[in-house]
Image (cartoon, rainbow, N blue to C red):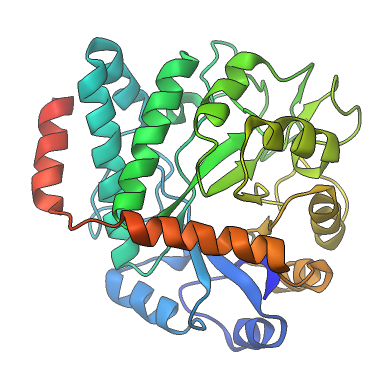
Length: 324
């Protein structure tokens, strides 16, 4: 398999996408709203993928949700759970775990095995709303606790969680989907939730330039930040880029991926679903080597060992009572 995860264009895999996947063998695919219409349709799409692929989905709760009503349960934004935690820390932590478990159960039933949550970014009063209510709190200790609880809930459903966006996106004053945010340096407040959750099997890097660390490259393409900051937290799992199709980055899709992988990211993530761009990323992605194979195996093993029998109806009722 190649060290890349790609998007798909629509509700079914096209013949061209099938050939690309068969010929180049990406590590996985990521699902978005354009790929999801109903449980029956989604099951058919997932069944058409090769066995053993990563099927990733962006499902945080709140406004970042690809599985939505009426077919799937809605989930609160992280900020609502953080507000409960501020009043009652035990209740907030329980709500975070329940949300992770409920999201995880739905995603697992849909055929997914990796979910890009929890958000470990710390809210900032002057930060761009691209994070906003996706952050649990402005208190890094609360973010650390709630992010860890949500991750454990996802694991209880057999799902591999992805903490994001390392080393911290909360203070960014612009949206990296549109332009590259620039900050002076990483702060201890930014890093605390990532350090506290360095045990997570996956992390996602941020498209943010920290000029004190690297004058030219964003975190996802900077060896200085990947090795000197993100890995220095103790994180030893799979590091995936944020979406390389975002406008924070320049150059071609293949160049973006090549630079990020050379800098130390384990996996290039390109989400657009544009066939030519996906192909360009795959053509520069190396084959999964022994070190990454070990990290991926450990991530799968953690999820399998953490899986519990979950009563989703009871859990949904309990969460509703906590957040009422």
